[in-house]
Length: 518
Image (cartoon, rainbow, N blue to C red):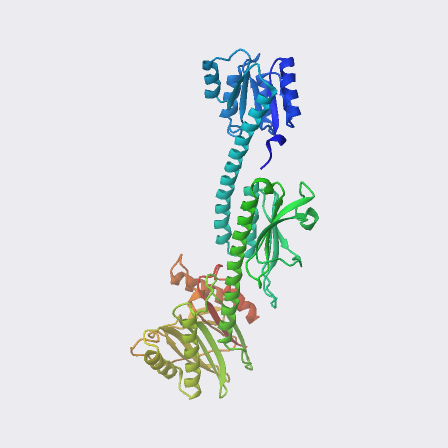
């Protein structure tokens, strides 16, 4: 908080001699003093800003001091400005009462002693400073709460830093820079970004950030840096106020830089802000680490390589659900067995580590029963028995086929899975083979035989490719058939074309296996 001695006072009096004395006394007391000789001039000067106190004569030539005080107090941004009435004529109790009622914070009757004027000015300014500080702090804390909600709602580090920079600019009424480094020791994964805004209404500019090498202790601290250390903005002074927070020894710090004027009344708000931003960054950092671990686990449970098959092209895709950090239950399988190719795709209900373990067990069971030489329908029947005995209550869908690469003959079985798409001569059709899900004790149909002709394409997929919350599955299947009917000569591009049907954010895992006989 500033001392009253550094305040700016406006003396308003239409008497040159009297105004001269008031200005002289206040100036000698160390105050910065401006003058006005009318009520109109006084209102213009106060409205221009930078006036902390008005010393106002009651009787002016153009309007009364009472009216001037009322106008000041009625102004939305000037209402807190203190006013001291002085008068040599309106000195009785009624006049004093009227002055205080109509906006004055103090009332002095002439003759006025210099010490009395200066003491009254200091007393009124102390109250004014305390009130302004309380109002500034309350507003800052309100905006801090809003910023905390915004940064914790961000889905990416870029969104988080953008929200933090905009919030800091709103809190401190200035430009702001927020920087975070999510790359931990011994790891190359993460980001180093810095966001800068010139004011609360301007868009944030986010760039790569060369993180500082300085050692920062755990905790939150406020310091001043040279403006050259934060070149993202043009600062009003050679120094900037920087709040830094580091939550753990093994985590890099987060920084918020604002003009040094923030240290006068809102240093504590700056400390709370950088702590809130650091907590949000840490939560996102943990989310990203869990997501990377989940994806690594998920991919380790899927085939590590695609077999090479003469005369055929193969392409696979796996896309995890955007909203999930946990592994899911979608899987695919491609493997060679005695010169024939086994292709399977499936989906275990749920998104969790448990769903992934069920998926792994089913995938290994399918391969084991296929190695024993069972046809597709028998493989699914045996797998269903295993699932019902060892994991009762669990459900899964699987589509399974065995291909003779020489003849293109395909033996096919399904267990409640979306039908594959067969594309021949530019026409797409679904291979319907209705059968109950795995996990249900119900009769199962025999295998379905079909031929994949030269140039034909067969697409297996999970329901995440065709199901949408905003439309029924028939619409998604129609879209898939239309997209599949125009196969790209490059099967990898073709697979990407099919994936494009799932508009981000993806609400469910997606697995795709595309097989083409060349």
